[in-house]
Image (cartoon, rainbow, N blue to C red; front, side):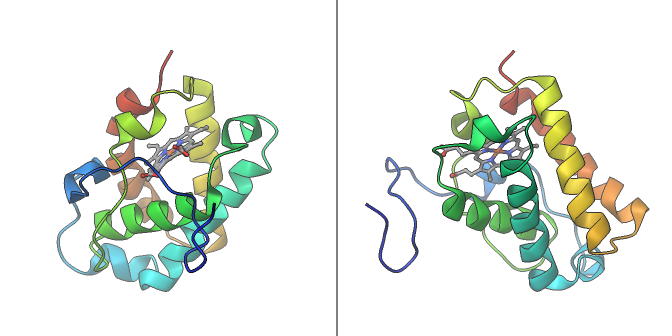
Length: 145
Ligand code: HEM
């Protein structure tokens, strides 16, 4: 049953740790500012999820998972890595993706959706690429085959 306050489904217990975010944050305020602070980051995280849910290449992977939770945890992860003043309370990348059977081409589709979301928010291309550089090393934990 969904939590009446957060709208999220319950998950098995775990101990939250910022290290679960899978990358060390940028230092200084520059990246957070370039993303439009927490508001801009929240729009980008939510939009990435919405584009992916509607993307025929990868929609099936998201079906029957909790997109309310994913929008929140993805926001927190992005916000933490961009040094925009958040802690990441979600699970680590290996645990989160272990039963999803994600392939390299699924990863590429998700990155394209994130790029589209960043483009819509007019994030400068060089800034987009700096951020993607933090996420790229996580593919090993996300991709199953
Ligand atoms: C570097 C790339 C990726 C990052 C940074 C990332 C980030 C995350 C985060 C933060 C969570 C939430 C963890 C939690 O609930 O505690 C999550 C879960 C999830 N991710 Fe990813 N993800 C990536 C790649 C992908 C790809 C390529 C797909 C599918 C095409 C995907 C599908 C999912 C799904 C379906 C869930 C929900 C799992 C569940 O309900 O247990 N992710 N991801």
